[in-house]
Length: 157
Length: 128
Image (cartoon, rainbow over all chains, first blue to last red; front, side):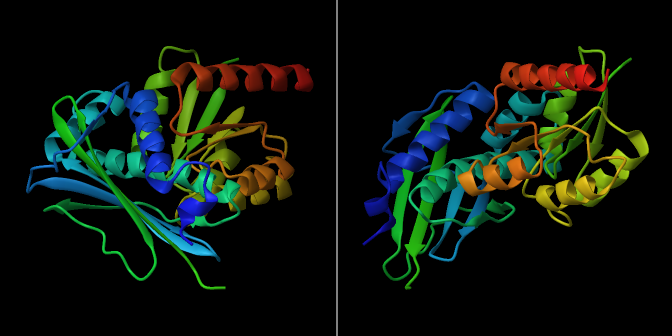
């Protein structure tokens, strides 16, 4: 059994809805699903761990530094510093993870969100361990690529 | 009297969003980056409302709430939770601690402003 067996929508759909809601509500931006992988070596990545007694997992959001600066400008306005860009990227991932966690809690998998970790560098791929469930989707927003990965593992009882 | 609002959130971006949001209104906005700092600012400034995050380093929102409720000077200060985590167990926990309202991130500016104005107005009626 994977976590999707317990969710009303599967894990990928749950994450996609969360991403679209965060972008539309907080940034007033719409997204289009894309088949193309993001193409940049200078990416900002933010990850948030979800840790519970019965499950554990991570949400990873990554996009170009250019888009990170654009999102920061949209959210807080005016000129932004590097710390602001990291903070906004972390907060966006935190909001997505929060939405995913609501779905997990409703399905009986309680847990806590860790504070976001933000780094800059080349593309990151989460490594699937054991019988964890992994979903990856690519999106396009104002011509920028957005990559969202989520991995959840039900812990043995 | 100009209302005092305290924003307690570890995300500087969220605090900046709130600063921008409340700038056109006649209110004083104070900031804190965690619950410990939030308690210190709340004690010194006696805000009319606290907008509080849940998940923060050093001291989280629930611990700050518990400490406020033990403090005679702060126990009646209205609090709106503003957090990414809207899980039922967290909503139940903060409701038991007397939180007036709950707004989940991502949030709509007008929705938050509406809740803030309602809570401040209601509190003034209760105190009159």
